[in-house]
Image (cartoon, rainbow, N blue to C red):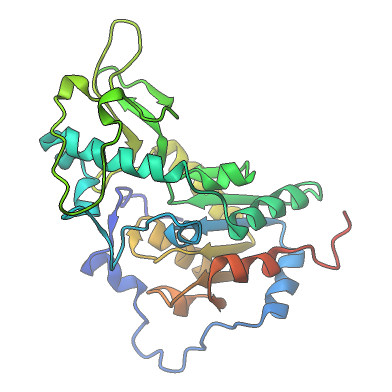
Length: 305
């Protein structure tokens, strides 16, 4: 079961990171297998597959990850802008940042990894089997690829929430408001637009006009309890788990797959590099997700439909 006392989004710090480290005295711990045939045999019998995805799966679509090298927007560390405190201090700057991200996403498309997951869900669904995506991404590329069973842990770039009335709604306007048109350039030499708060995105509910914010879960905020509960149920009932393109350092998602593995359920990691959780998993497939995932999820010879 997911540790419910830790439900706010954040980067794993020292006391949370410790459980993900390789346990002491485990020098002889077997490294994860990269045997695709062995994975495919397990896959062919799995009835309930959970797929946890992170920024790496969308990076191959050209979506900025804002992690590691290049993790800055202008001179600001991107994570420092994804907080309630940053929005309270300077809503214009934060909206410029999210306007930039929204406009970038409108130019991107799902890649072979997104498409493979969606095709797998549709195909296995006809066989009475389930595939559920639990994603940390806010780009909606899974839904655009055709996936239906999706839990967006951190919300969506294309939803807004009113700071006054709390109304939440999908919003695909480009630009989201007139004063943000042409704003949000990431160049470090670009000056802040300093848009007056009354000219930032406003609620369109009758009689409200409150300030809108992106309907995403910022660092330090609590995840939606309903979504978290449903994700827990998927993870507790799955008989195969895939971890695709996630660094395993953003909490609480960082603990999802290790806790599944602790129950003896096979977990397969698809990533460009090892993560703090890699040694806990049965499989690790190194390389771009768009290359490694499609052959792992393609139709198995034992499938009947």
